[in-house]
Image 1 (tube, one colour):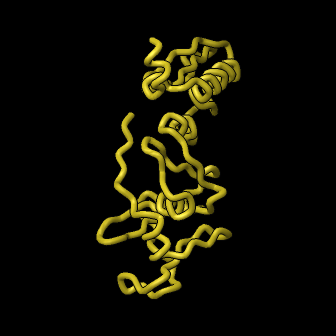
Image 2 (image 1 turned 135 degrees about the horizontal axis):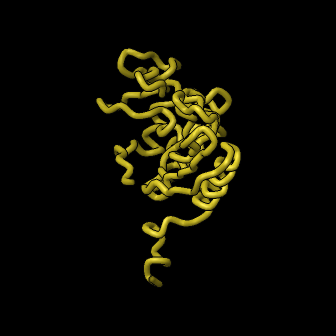
Image 3 (image 1 turned 120 degrees about the vertical axis):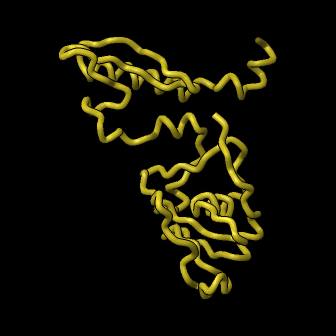
Length: 177
């Protein structure tokens, strides 16, 4: 899965424009910007629930700007994840670098989920199947007598997916194969 991202402003530019509060996770304007006075909270909450900040006519997710403000860059192919799933909690200790695959494994249960377990569906009244999306493909894990057994299979597969490197991005593996 390709990650489409805009080029972010440099750390120096961000530090020139904003002050970051490590305790609250808020970016505030260091200078007057777009009629927003110095010291005011930068940006606003967008329609998807994430805080957005405009810079020179482009809009960026605040958590991405904060990561660059603190660490200097976001490596190519990585995303910034909110650990506690709160989209506006942009404290640096709540943010982490993840691959798209890791981010997909960290999604909340769908509200239509009837089993109460991620990756588990009921096939008949007494049978449950487990699946996991691994490197872009749905992988069937088997049929089980209980939802809990199916979820245990999903959990093992998830742990394996998170510890097995993606062969497409592993140059050493590709050179040997």
